[in-house]
Length: 175
View 1 (cartoon, helix red, strand yellow):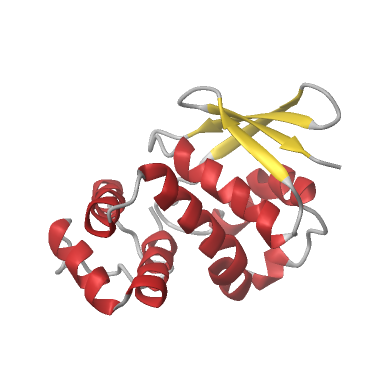
View 2 (cartoon, rainbow, N blue to C red):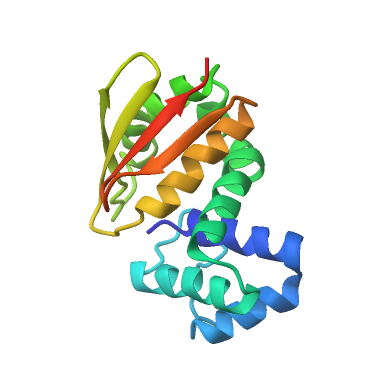
């Protein structure tokens, strides 16, 4: 996994809960000496990132869903608009961004060694309900759901996201 994910998590925890909490999370996840946690282009082992998420829940006393929602909002409203601005500004709505993420992942990671971004398939149930199939061996559908909700917050649009399975969710757009 690219270090942008762990870098975002570190910034989120430090700004909202304090640097001491991030240090406690790293200790709990046995990741104090892991290189590249704060470097967006570095490679961070998937198991280490998974432990960081689990430790975040444990240390902060929050559920996995709360962690995913907090991460999704921070990624979409603070972190990614800064470091991926060229990609971020191309979208005018939550619908456009969600439908464009598969292409963005391809563009961003095309020249990156070891990049294995998730892939997405989309199927419209009707004009407001989109079923997204998340394809990745990382099993991070809950994180994707938090990110989708974060996209809605970024564009100040009301949308709801419902988990259908370990690889699918339904996104309902309000208007």
